[in-house]
Amino acid sequence: MGYKVAVIGATGNVGREILATLAARQFPASEVVALASSRSVGKEVSFGEKTILKVRDLDTYDFAGTDIALSSPGAKVSAKYSPRAAAAGCVVIDNTSHFRMDPDVPLVVPEVNPEAIAGYTKRNIIANPNCSTIQMVVALKPLHDLATIKRVVVSTYQSVSGAGREGMDELFNQTRAIYVNDPISRTKFTKQIAFNVIPHIDVFMDDGATKEEWKLVVETKKILDPKIKVIATAVRVPVFIGHSEAINLEFEKPITADEAREALRKAKGVTVIDHRADEGYVTPVEVAGDDPVFVSRIREDSTVENGIVLWVVADNLRKGAALNAVQIAEVLARKYLKT
Image (cartoon, rainbow, N blue to C red; front, side, top):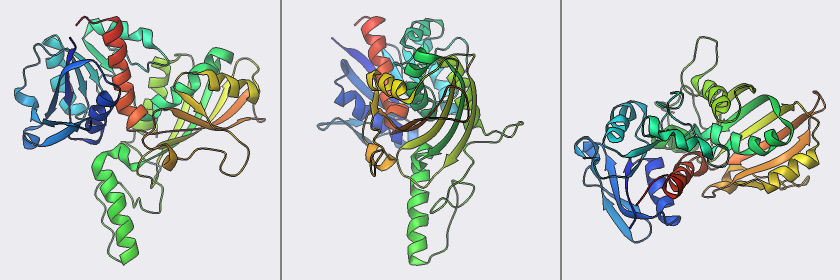
C-alpha cells in the first residue's frame, strides 16, 4: 500500500519537476494524479520514464481519499484550492507564497527544521519556503549551530526560471533578437534581461525593499531563528536555471574559515567545492539537475568580528522547490501518516 498523491500545477516548471522527483526518489505512491486548470485538461505529463499522466481539472477534482497534495499553481490559485483540499483530509505541501507566514502553517526545510512538520495538523497545510531562502538556510544551519549567527547580508543572483516559463522564454527570445538584430520585446521583466542584470524581483514595498527581499528576511527568521538580523538584495540575472548567493555572516562566537568549511562538509544536503584555484568553485550552469546546495569561496571577513563569507549555489527548480517539497512529503509519510 502507498499514498494517493495529487500534483497541483502539474504542467508548470515546478509541477513537472515535482513529478520527476517523486518518480526518481521512488516515493511510496499508490496513485499519482496530475491537476491543472481547465485549459490544460487532457494534456500529458511524464511521471518517471515510463508513465504518462493525463492532466485532470483542478476545479472539479474531489480531494477526498487523496493523502498528500504537492501544490505549485501560483498564490491566488493556492489560496482557493489548498484549503479546499485540506478540508477534505488531504495534507497540502504548498509551494506558493500564500501560506508561508501564517502562524498556524509550518514553514519547513527538512535539513533545518523537520520537527516543524508536526504542526501540520492545525490546518493540514505545510508551506514550502521561497527558493532563495531554502538554499540559504541549508547552508546557514550548520554554521548557526556552531557559532550562532547574528547578522546576514545576502545578495542573490536569481535565474529567470524563478519567473516561470515566461521568464525563460523572454531571456531566450531577447538573446536571439540581439544576435539577429531584431527589436527587443519585454513583457515579463521590468527591463531587458538578456546581457543585463535587474535589481528588482517581485513588487516594491514601503521601505524600499522588494517582496523577494522581504521573504528572505522573514522566512529565515521563521525557519532558523527569529533573532537573526537579515538584509537582502535580490537580483535577476540572465541564467536559465540555478540561483546563486553571496552571503556575509556575522557570528556571536569566534569561527574560522576552516571550522566553517568542516561544519558544512558534514551537513546534510550540502556539497562543499572550495579550492582556491581556477575552477575551484561552483557556478549555476554546473548545478542544473543536481539536488545538493553547493558552497564555495568560504573565507573570513576581516571587516567584522567573527565574520565568514560564502558563495552558495543551487538548482532553484529542484532544491529550491520540487525536491524540498518531496522531502517534506517523505518525512510526513514516514513519521506522521498511515497507509
